[in-house]
Length: 217
Image 1 (cartoon, rainbow, N blue to C red):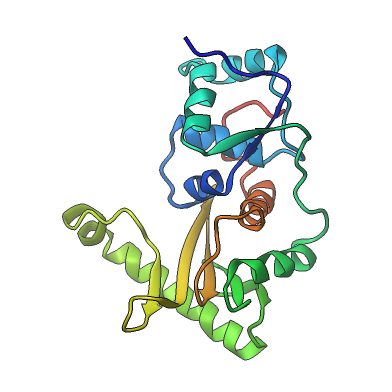
Image 2: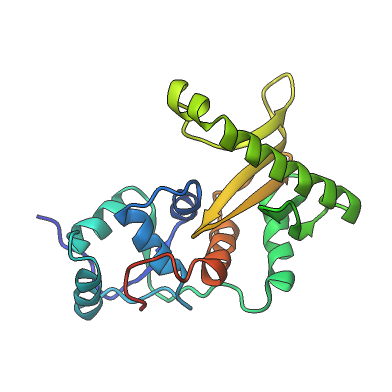
C-alpha cells in the first residue's frame, strides 16, 4: 500500500508537459496535468487538496492517480512552489524558445500559420515557417487514418533530417484545450527541460482554462 508524501508542491515535469500537449485525447491524467498548469503556482499536496481533487474527479482514485503520474515521471514534488514566468507572452516566450533549440532558433505559431513568438529567425523566415507549420499540420490531419490507424504512428511531429537521421528542422504540434499550436525548432530539439514546461504552462493558463474539469486550486 503506497502513501503519498504530503507537504510538497506538485509540479509537472517536462515529460508531463509534453504528455499533456502532444495530442487532444482526454483522460484523467491529462485533466489533472491541465489543472496543475492553469494555476498561478504549483499546489501544495495535503489532505485538503486531496479532498478537493477527489470531489472534482469522483470516478478516479486521486491518490492512486497522483502516485501513478509520479511513477511515470510526469509530475514531481518540490519543496517550494513553482511559478511560470510573469509578463505578456510576447515578452516571456522568446527567452524560453531560444533554450529549446541546439541552434537557438525556434518559433511558436498558431493554427492559422501566424507566429506568436520567435527566437533566432528573421521576420520573413518566421512568417514562411509558420505558414509551413500550418500546412503540415493540416496534411497530417488529412492522413491521420493512415499514419495513426494503419501504420500505428502515435506522433504527429514532422521534421527535415540529414543523411544520418539528425533533425535539421522539426515541427511539434502542441494541443492546448481546443487550440493547436506548432513549435518549430531548428537543429536538435531540447525539450527535456524547465523552459519547455514553462512554455506549455503559459499556454495552458492563457488558452486551456476552460478545458479541465478539475476544481481550480
